[in-house]
Image 1 (cartoon, rainbow, N blue to C red):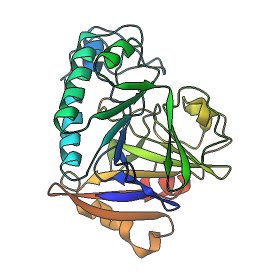
Image 2: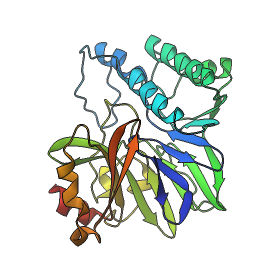
Image 3: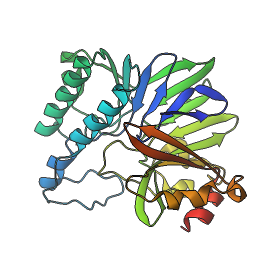
Image 4: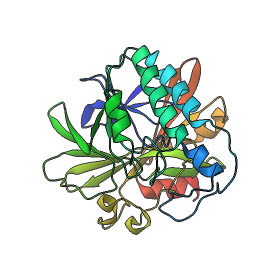
Length: 296
């Protein structure tokens, strides 16, 4: 279920069928943007979108985010050896308060992970993670602004992405914050990863774990993103985009077109069986490929 996220860094993997990445050297599973408590915020009419819009205002929506996260973790922890969990920002949702749902679900997540044998849990502070520090301290979870992890001799920085950071001493920077998504296969949005080359470095953008947060549709224009790390770039035309397709939900014939030899210079497709389900991991090699093949 593991696919190298970067050819030049084989120790950093995408976990097929999930928005997670995995570091095999340290047996670390990385995720971002869980946004626990979002459903309570929506029901109370609390809007925290930095884009000043939301499709969920003062409405009751099913509380599925925590269950979805646990379902994903069940699948991964049943297949991979995981010693450490790293949440790369926005574990919770509300900016200005600690909601009851947030507190309950954060504590329940940590309890679940420890019951699964994962005791080393680190939360990187995201822009939504206010009023959570004291809760994490009580349950012995490390709370940091960023963390640098060596992977196969490369210096990899994990930071949420909502603030400027010094990139000079790192080869790879992994952020969340953007919740990138892709319009394709006649489906409105798929969560996706982005790989952005920047002066011999690589910026990796993680998709959101929370299913209610499809975020920004990928675009080559840096000004349309939120992260100051991305906004200062000149263009994202050379960024590659990676998504995954559950072939139990979408016909495999939709993917077979992308597997043709004629398209191999634009796209790579690999299939994986995870927990008895087949997934296709699809990498568009640049934005032109996305625009051409997904007809955006």
